[in-house]
Amino acid sequence: MAVNLGKLWLDKIFPDYDLFVFLDADTWIQSWEAIDQLIGAASEGSLAIVGTWNRYRDSLPVHWYWGLIPVFRSFNLKAAYRAGLPLAVLKKMNRYPDLNAGVYALKRDTPHWDRMRRWQDIV
Image (cartoon, rainbow, N blue to C red):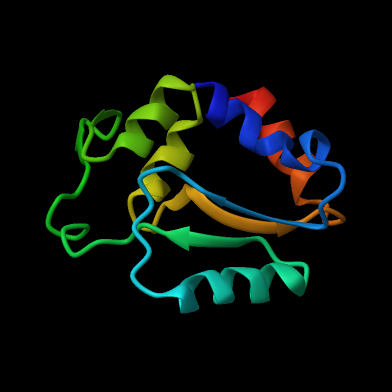
């Protein structure tokens, strides 16, 4: 839990660095080219993050009872429901890949840090 909260504060925790690459401990890197791509995208001011689309995505849809009660098929959808996100947002979530918050890169001077911390406070 401390890592999940702390990783959105890396720009404040490590003030001497200009670019951050965050990798969860269980990240599997098959090629260093992936790290180079993260750094390259972040160097341009983008949030470089990995999507978690998988081959089972379409075969495990969310089922809705009466259009109101979700039967969950993903960790993120379950967490979003428990966080109290609006029903309209939940219904859209399963159609798009999740963003893997365990793999990202970001420059210190981008506005993403404040935005991510704002959403952390909301959720």
